[in-house]
Length: 251
Image 1 (spheres, rainbow, N blue to C red):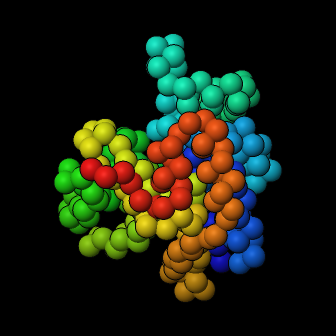
Image 2 (image 1 turned 30 degrees about the vertical axis):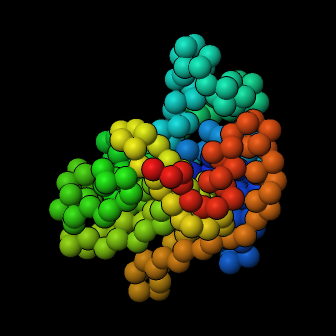
């Protein structure tokens, strides 16, 4: 039988990552999957990278990982958080991120991507045009999967835990976010993603003796104040709010 801990959207929060890994190991999990958006954030990028090197997780690249190593000089100069991240990381983590695949087939049963199979900036399961996440229709999700026919599809990016069964029998799982329980973004339009809790989120994917896949979601307490302190040092009061409350900004 196969048993995986599925992590996503760590966003440099090594404090949440440590708590999630310890929780997963207490459940007997030995194999980890990391769906990207790993090191972008004002908390602890290098410490997060160093911790992950000992975990031997199956890892793919997220949109904000890509945005770190693709950042132009103008983008860096206009973004103090990016300046901190690059200074904190050094060269080795940048090379590591560049080596990560866009997506991967973990097994014959499991396919993993960050956003959708063709675009790491698009939410697979939700439409946010109204300013908040609304589930896409069954047919929309299947169309966005673009022929990926694995029984289990793993995705991240939205920070919202979901388990969606499609009409074609596929199971789509988003584990939520390890390190960032809420955010507000103005791209491609203004919207907020919220979990209403400051706990770290991940999922366990477990294959039964009959071959079926079971999914359990976990919300794990961790020393939030340590992450908040680092965000405050970087003058990211928006992150302080997100990390503390699990809520986005007022729209």
